Length: 546
Image (cartoon, rainbow, N blue to C red):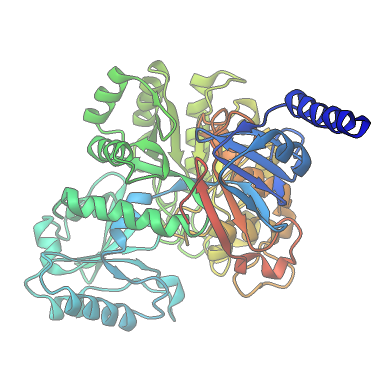
């Protein structure tokens, strides 16, 4: 009898324990046994998290998450490092996607190789109305001279050709394309230049001159644009990008982004900078800033000057290798001021491309006129590539965010001193000096000018070396930034620069569940290995997309 009573008591006791123990909360995904860099305010490193309805529910230890939550999908990461989804704070996502459909000229080591690649591309795509290409860089060639149109004229006498330089601020056109653009030796314009030789156009167009020809290129169809977005997305997911800032889009392109996102075909989160055409400005000023979980439209992309490689960057003193050439602004200061006034009055963010020290000074001073000291308007200088020491403090004084691309430094370091000279080069690519102003940098790549892989930018920012880990001591190593700062620059600081820090940029409860799993830890790996570390998985809203 006693044995029966003891057994009954034990059963009742166990049932009581089961009844009293808290019921686990159901979630969509549990990740544990990881090294989770949360990038929260304390830069906490934890082990596990739970996700429900596309957002992080809780982040903590393995035991705390596994004891509190249950899920049909529980992933043991076997110690792998996890970071917030990487954000590219300045890119050309749509242009990159379209560029996958044209001749790839990146890395061509001579003008002859450029022509050969264009010929091969056309042989594979003979039906195209225009022969297009992108990515050439004369600084890689012996002599470093601009190409000319003669070989293209011979190959394509009746078909227009337009080949864009790597930075997008110069292009090579054949005679057919020049004719369509109405370009002659007498063509002149503000903010652009037609290069001449022996009194005739060579085919090289600088900055605003490109538009005379590019405006004649047929716009991509919706199917072509859709393909461009989806191809770009696939490649970007493979390198851990979950949000991309597209620097300069038309209204119709932004509306296609929304359409593709609503269809759930485009899962990439986007921050769209709007091209400041009169039509675009009137529409978005009336509509006002827009933000949801997938898309933010709150800024206008302005071009202050051209690029250093094509000598279109506006400098305070002449180019070291081209006497009397100061480069040029793409608009006069009064036009920039008028744009700033309108953008300020309508509550949008002004993000201006500034390469040369003259362009940076001009726009910083115009920004200062409207920002009037410390503020939370988050106006940005895109690139901030060459900044006079006299102008550097203006970033802090007016809460201006430097949006920089570290791989520009390691791509340009072979020839930048020829353009700037031994003293002015020290004011270029000064990322640590810029970081010291506001304690913040937004990091991007400017792809397709540079490679889409954000870890190339991480390596360049931290090590200041190229793919072969040259030079031995790094390029201007005094302007290296720490790994923690580089990670923040491509996550939480990039999100802040986009007005998105409450949505993303860190692994914290309530934020969108975007994260990246790498094969090795970029925070501890040997410096020489940083560029070669691979992405294992990319998640958006808790969904594995790579």
